[in-house]
Length: 207
Image 1 (cartoon, rainbow, N blue to C red):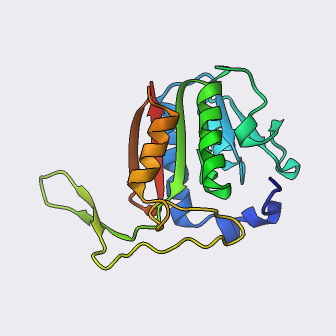
Image 2 (cartoon, helix red, strand yellow; image 1 turned 90 degrees about the horizontal axis):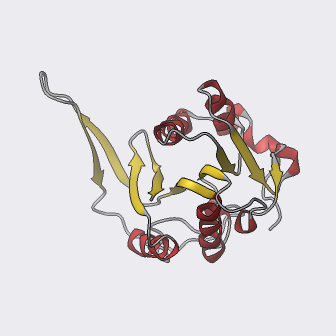
């Protein structure tokens, strides 16, 4: 596939809103919890994850087809040019939706091939929810995702970047999860939406 955007797409004033910053926190939190010695990031984008991860001692290598992003490895996500089990963790944040669904599942399989311990990804979830926080004195704060009762899944239309999104009509969460289980039948899968940015849904695959 050809690259979809140039480096200017990731300008701070255009790309890095507060909601995306919250997602980067979750990216770091999930990967750091796995205590990896080596990490492969598919689609480095701004380079922020790699830079922040380095502050906390993580050795992150990047892969992309776009040479202007200066990745450590140049190549497609569905044919990663690295040996089997050569990295502890492979991750891709808001990346796999930029390729057709079948190709994204091949890319996910490739990530599992090169990762020894785990795979961490995030994907867009189009289902509208209303994040709410309930604070009761002397009790634990509760964070809720209230579903919009009027939500109806829409057909996805390619916008020049996203080929598909979770909970669009063609790809309800249940069918996406089933496809992921087919890719990784031996993995445990944990998923959640970021409270500060519900459009981003994380998946953590562990053996």
